[in-house]
Structure formats: structure tokens, C-alpha cells
Length: 100
Image (cartoon, rainbow, N blue to C red; front, top):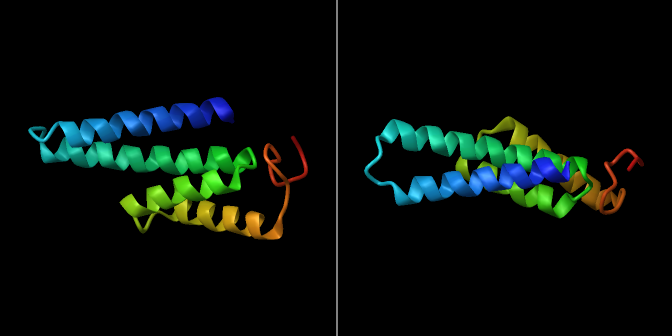
């Protein structure tokens, strides 16, 4: 999960740079890049969640929701990370099922 998380974050950062540094691009390209960045952030939230990194999962899910407030997957991932953090389940590296 750590490798996936790293790749999602690299992709999201590259797309963010693309979005902000290319004002001459067609609007459709900027919209597509923004949508892909949202998916990458939501996937990063899932990778962090699966790795037991609740705080990071919440941060990535919130970032995805800031871009697309109706993103159901990001919203679920945020709620799940909040539930696990509140319950004190697991620790860093625990997948929430008591497994490593």
C-alpha cells in the first residue's frame, strides 16, 4: 500500500502543477486534470486507510472532497478513517482488521 500511496501522491502533485501552470490549455483539459487529481487523492486516502494511517487518510479524503464535494468514495473514506481513529483501532500499519 505504501508504494501505491506514493504513486497516487506523485500523480496528484504533477496534475496540480499542470493545472496551475498551464492557463492557456483548453478548459476541457483543465477539467479532466482536476477530475483525475480528485481520483488520485481519493485513492491515496484508501491506500493510507488500508495501511492504518488514519490521519493521512483523512487529509487526502478532505483534499479530494475540497475539489469535488459530492465524491462518495472520498466521503466514505473520510468517515471510515474518522471512525477508526475515534475507536483507537490499530496503529500505524494496522489495516483496521487486526492484520499487518
